[in-house]
Image 1: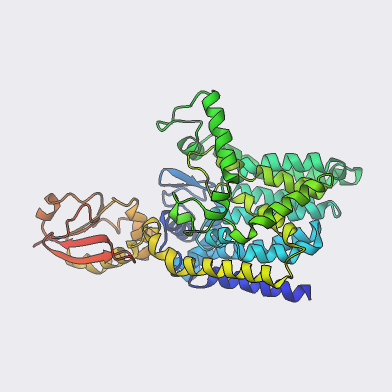
Image 2: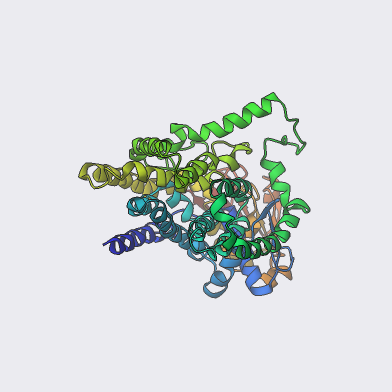
Length: 494
């Protein structure tokens, strides 16, 4: 019976993450386009977009991306081409796998909550929202869950310690947040399970695991601390000001850290989300369903009552450490940097639900809450979030390619940021051709109106702020789903 239930839940999770994947989210964003292009260049040339051979940190828009998602995506886009589905498949499969892993983890911790945990993960707004796009944090979360599962298994079968170490390493190579979360989490696990970990029978496998982990981490440590790959930290951390200068550790900074931490526990964030980040939130819905709120509280009470149990200590540790990576950022609360937190919120909610889940009213309310979320996500969210997903680049890029032979130059606005990578992706350019100057007809910069209109036989692709509505020579307007203009395209006179 349990097998049948988990298979149905896995099918539901797959359906919710694959349905309309080419339409929701409505477009590739900057990061997805960069992942797609770098994956394609790696597959065809073994180099990134800057010509660096098989890098462990991918330079991208002044940032450095973790390598695992790109390397896993490379064979997919290399064999099946670049589109919104192929770029997102790694994240989708990681999301489906995470539902399975949380089932296995919950089954070890407390068997009666395994099915409930998997179901809540499958319908979690937070998880659906971040496991459909090509988001590296979702892949990192999959490896964190794999690490937790391997750790719990290793307490009985010690060879799983190798899996624990490797999964942890892969999570560190997948995204940046685990670099803050995992060291504290692993230290906590060692304290809680010290006697079981360091028993005499485990010495050999622990030594092998430690050496293996250390070898795997050396390149990451080098890339993070001894190269520009760590620059993102100073760009987004409250320890540095907007100019990149280090801030003094004073009372004000400490108060900010405490505030940044506590705000993640706010019911407003947990159940209503963060309105400042429309791309990362479905309007009126937080990371977890509102109906779960009382059961999250019941679950916490249950954990506190059983705080002497090792599994309870593990969950409380996770609950306290989950928001930690987001604390040092300037934007809080942050649904991506605190994403490591999601599984424990799910499991704690399942603990609170376990005595009520079979009651028809609770199941009805959960289902109703989820139906409302699904409606908003699949039908409303793509409209109001389109600007934040860089909607319009595909149509503009395809139109530009169709007009290439009829104009001398194409000026493509940089008003929305990084237009070159979108043209490479949406025009299905070959990396070697781009390296050898296939895009020489393109000029990526802001459109200067009306000066650029004096240029002969040019195609100008600009934003509404650059090209006025009544400008002469407009041959095409690309609109957002809400009808507002995204791009205006002008063809100048011969």
